[in-house]
Image 1 (cartoon, rainbow, N blue to C red):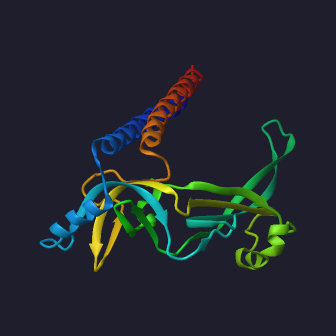
Image 2 (cartoon, rainbow, N blue to C red):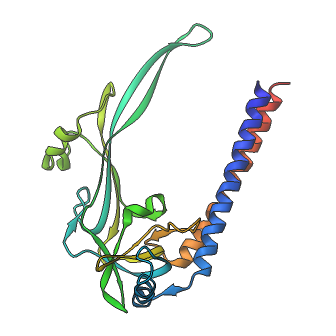
Image 3 (tube, one colour):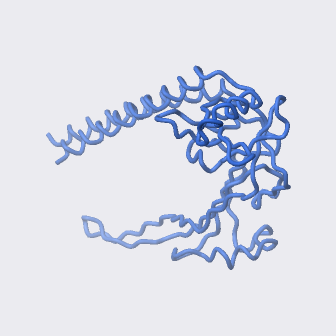
Amino acid sequence: MKIIIGLLIIAAGIGYAVYQTQKMNKLNLEIQSVETSKIADAIEIVNSLSATDSNYRHYVELKGNIFTKEKVTAPFTEREVAYYEDTTYAVSEEVRHYTDKDGHHKTSTQKKEEKLSHECSMVPVYMRDDSYGEGICVDVESFGSEADLQSGCDRMEHDTSQWMQRHSHYRSMWGRGTGAKFLGYRLVEKVLLANQPVYVLGELYKQGDSYYVGRSRIGQKASKLSYKSEDDLVAGNQSAKKMSWIIAAVAVVVGIIVICQSF
């Protein structure tokens, strides 16, 4: 049995590294091979080709600044942003009593997090550059895990904290979760700041009289929305590849140790 477990650990580590390497190589290839377009030029192409195909989507790389036409305030950090995603967890402590293999009674304490809510801002987000000041709508949610958002906060708030006293309505909305001993709330906020420079790799398309950019639906084309620069993205993807092989190497060592224990 330990031989099988060891082999599975090794296979999982190597498989993860291969998957990450292929994913990062593909993303870097798209980022480096697709030429950056001005928004106005990309719109001109969409207008021309959508005349014969109303569903035409133009694969494009854009760089500009993100903004909204209404003021958006992030709830947890209370600062002006273009977009936010807020997630709340109930943090509790569970005490478990058990008997070990030698018959000794022991106690273990474990923290538990239970997701209570997830909220995204609903105000439309736009992107503009020096060629098109009016801006095109950015479908942030369509990018899913391929959207890089800045960390706004990741902190604990207790029932009696000043912040919770000022926002007491959250307490009744969230509840306390199902943990035995409630410790507090973990508040996680990710944001795109107002007028922040952004990088977009995706598809530009037209709906009615408006233009949108979102995740690519063309074949297996890569997509990305990020507050990072193109150079930072490429460097980060290279680092992610190296880290995946370090994890694979650790998995191989652990797997070999498990296998050796069977002899």
